[in-house]
Amino acid sequence: MTRTLVLVRHGQSDWNLKNLFTGWKDPDLSEKGVEEARLAGRRIRERGLSFGTAFTSELTRAQHTLKLMLEELGQDVPTTRNIALNERDYGDLTGLNKDDARAKWGEEQVHVWRRSYDIAPPGGESLRDTGARVWPYYIHHIQPKVLSGGNVLVAAHGNSLRALIMALDGLTPDEIVARELATGVPIVYRLNEDSTVAEKTVLEG
Ligand SMILES: O=C(O)[C@@H](CO)OP(=O)(O)O
Image (cartoon, rainbow, N blue to C red; front, top):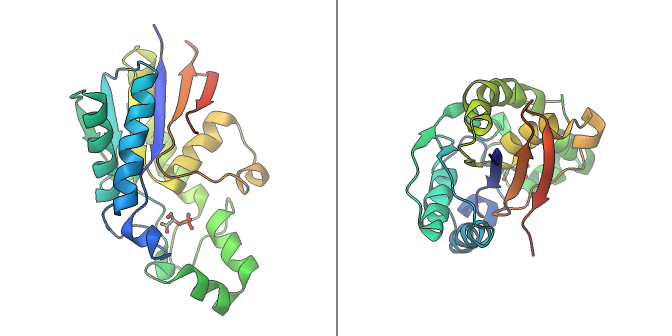
């Protein structure tokens, strides 16, 4: 029994390309994002992994990434979509250009809003808030599938996955600040029977 969990941040979206805060807005993948998603699927295929279940968010960029990965894998897997896996809600920053926001509020403040654990952007969610919906969803819906040996593929978002990875890797609020997730790079976890992490491999390069 392999108990494998693969996490993938969606490929580059049109709004990533335009450098806009995206959050719960729903742009699709850019051309580059489509290629990144396909490459992610091929990287997973090279590992010979097959999946019993897949999960994604309610947002198009993650769903599209999952679809393209499964096409590359040649696997038709039952998929569950849930809002709990959505990107962090960016509140009032949504739709603003990230460089314009730095010019207005300063580099440091914008970095705190984007990467800190417990400071929320105005009207939006902190990473802690995001984790408060992602982690219970993981525990109740995703982890049981992994522990039963079905191998699970999750396509989600930079911050919903940072929140999950923080818990899986046992990172502190200070340590999570420096964690960035690249688009379309699969992260493979193998879990022990007791749900702790046995091994983590990042499929990059
Ligand atoms: O705009 C967003 O929703 C996210 C991810 O693209 O941005 P950030 O890099 O600030 O986490």
